[in-house]
Length: 419
Picture 1: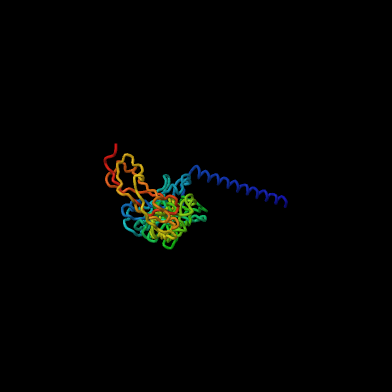
Picture 2 (picture 1 turned 90 degrees about the vertical axis):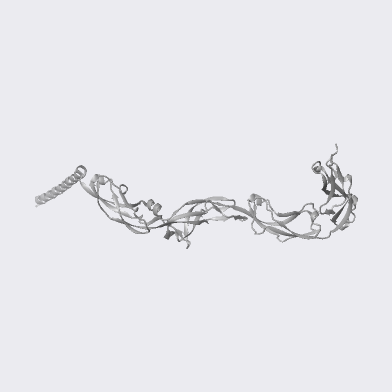
């Protein structure tokens, strides 16, 4: 019984070894056939894109554009020697559909043409045709609006109007898609807190009438990125004031009223920081003998802009605590200055002037307290005949009395000058 069991065990072992030997021989034979004999073989290649050709032709000749059919892919089966087929990829196969015969908008079914590599044969394709959608190609120009993802202006500063390197973008594509485009936006990246002007760059995106982003592969933009200059200004509210040329006016003797007390301005921080007021005008006290009202055109310093919509300031002037008085002063040769070789003749021996001042001093002023000066320097040899020449007045022994108005005297200047 023991010998029989031993023989059966040996027999089973021999059968297992024989099976392994047969399997190895079969594998060797298969490798030989595949590598040495290299038999015919079939191979399937997937994800081959269908290229639409002559699209430029229908765009140029018929102003058409394709908006469907670009994403089609096919699966191709090839036959050939195994070692050749094993090297072929989707990039080696060209699948095309010709659109050159299309002349009108619509839906078209076009045959797919496949070109396979040498040493291979086309067996079949998963798709024989491709459907393309064609529409009229249109152009539309829309405004670009900046959109900020993060922009914080420090206190005391304001943002000016942004300046875009291109304020508009031209959009080209099927008419059905362009009709819903409302405008474009350029997204300005997060700039954080800023106190000075900056330049930023952003991508242009199309926005529809509902405020959504238009993402359409059949719509093209003339520009995809632009720059945005963002001006940042210092901001300040300045009091409006008047100043006086000679200093005769003060809060005790005149009341000056402005119809506007302050003005909001903006400008470069270096300029704005130096301003604590804005002078509307400098009043020449001698030109306003009586109560009056007048308008002054507002003038701003360089680099400063107003933020309010007005260009003039109305000023009301009211005298108080002072009076006017007229007086006659003599005019003679002693009043002429810088005559040089000029031959002249004074045609007046006196001049009536009007004064204004504190009554306590005004009525103490006499002709002897007033010095008149007639300057002929600028008239030497330049003019002849009767000429009106300004008279400059100087008041002695008083600080509150001054002349009001402008005064002239007639002088005859002769063409024949003394040698």
